[in-house]
Each structure stands twice: as C-alpha cells, then as structure tokens.
Image (tube, rainbow, N blue to C red; front, side, top):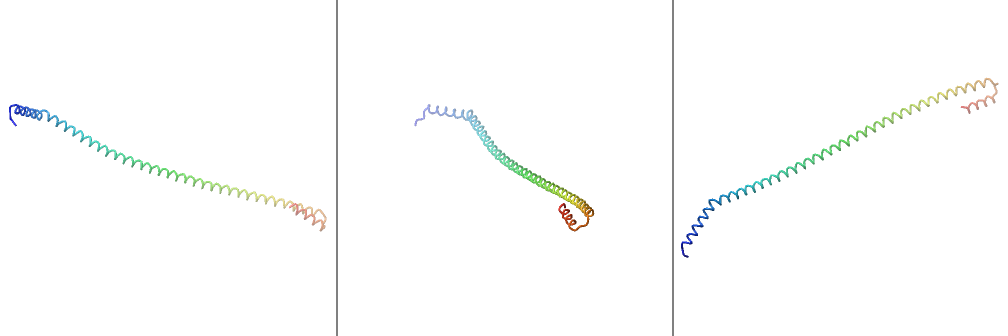
Length: 156
C-alpha cells in the first residue's frame, strides 16, 4: 500500500466530514432522536394511563350497575311488601265487612223472627178469643165443642 498525497487528502477530507458531521449534523440528529424517544415514551405512558383509567371506569361502571341492580331489587321487594300489605288490609277489611253484614243479617233475621212470633202470638190470641167466644155462644155440646176445637186447630 502506497501512501500518496491523494490518500492523505482523502483522509483529511474524510476527517473534515466527520468533524463537520459531529459538530453540526450529529447534535441535530441526536436531538431529533431524543425528542422522538420522549414522544414515544410519553405516548406509551399515556396509553398505560388510558388503560388504567379504562379499567377504573369499567370497575366503576360495574359497581354502579351492581348498585343499581341492588336498588332495583330493593324497590321491587318494597313494592311487593306494600302490595302484600294492601292485599292483607283489603282482606281484613273484606272479612270485617262480611262479619258486619253477617251480624246485620242475623240481627234482621232475629228481629223478623221476633216479629213473626209476636204476630203469631197475636193471631193465636185472637183465634183463642174467637174460639172461646164461639164456644160460649153455642150451647155446650161435646161433639160441637170437639168440632170447634178441630176447626180452631186447623186455623192455627
């Protein structure tokens, strides 16, 4: 290998190129690479935060749905209890009304029976008086007396 002036010139030109690149080009490249690395790191951090926020939001949503279902179940249970209470009260009111109507009907029946007895007593009394007056008006005859009593018995 011969060392000649061309080789030395090329070496000096290459050294100037390296110095020029190291001094002017390399800092811009490293700065751009570092900025890009920061942007990528920020993007990855943002993605991780977004995933964490998404998981947290999903957990909150699941908890809210669970709470809403529990509240809905409680509301349904309370509504069923109220419905049962209303039904029980209506049944109790109906039983009380039936008992009241039954007592009123029994009172009406008892008063009607009492009136019927009183009417029967009055009729029996008036028939007895009529029978006695007929017996007294007629002459006392055993056969007539028996016929009169039979007639009176058939009228009663």
